[in-house]
Image (tube, rainbow, N blue to C red; front, side, top):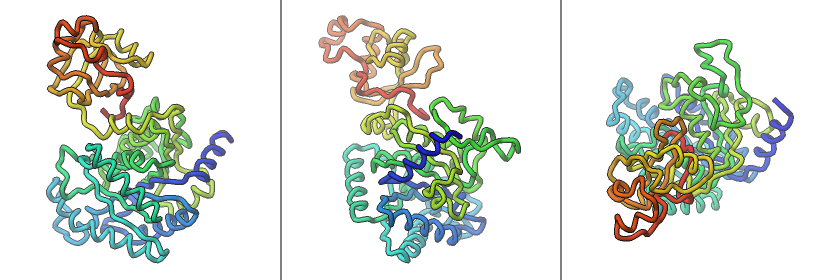
Length: 384
């Protein structure tokens, strides 16, 4: 890899003031449950980085495994209720392990359990942000996990990679480090193809063929490399670089901050989206879908224009004014956009295909010439 890549990577690592580190179950656990040796090594390295003045937010899996370690009857169960019960048992044990090891370095930790509802609601999102900023101001290390015990299937983050990507926006992080069981991202699944090579740097994650790179999942975790690259795509849109490392390497964080080139570095997008657009796209769930014609797709996706009713072909789902909707091109292959609609689904059904000048005749008033304004649009939304 070029000298410029190494220099860029070292510069970011040297100057990052706030880092989100995610560690998965495949790193933290063994067949016998939570591996305290790994927890100790991780805390040792994080404490070292923290001593340099870097804010650290740790997104940690492992609660379910810690619970199953206590109750062997949980091991063979995989449905939501048993996982939630195991998490309820294991979460306190996981935090106790972290408290014990970080206290050796005179570090204070805080448990932060989040649900998707906490981040969907703008007021609760702001409250969570204020709490996190206060903790970081006190030089506390927040340890974040999903509140599995109360989360329902429809409102789960899916995995902690997805949660970590949202935490990046919550705390306005400078860098995302994802610790996994692999040595980085490979050109193909190394378990199936011994000739697969590690990719040192992904310069444009938006066009990377990630489906070919990640055909497997770890046995202990819920995500696999695919979810990690989806999280990296979101991070890139936010302007945050990602470093995927093997958390099984005893000194992975130390080596990375010393400038050693291993794992996979993923560049951020050259033009970052706003925190507000990121929140709209990834904290809210689309309530419906708007299908648009090719002319409108060119205006929206290529020219950065607002979506006008004239370009709408069809509307699906029932939603009110201000709802988040998916926007897709009829017969096209573009990745969908998402945006806040100025009109309800019933109103859009009346004005689709019509010029803005005709809206008042149909609805009695024309408050907005746009169906979705470009300021409330995010193109190429990830995973939607």
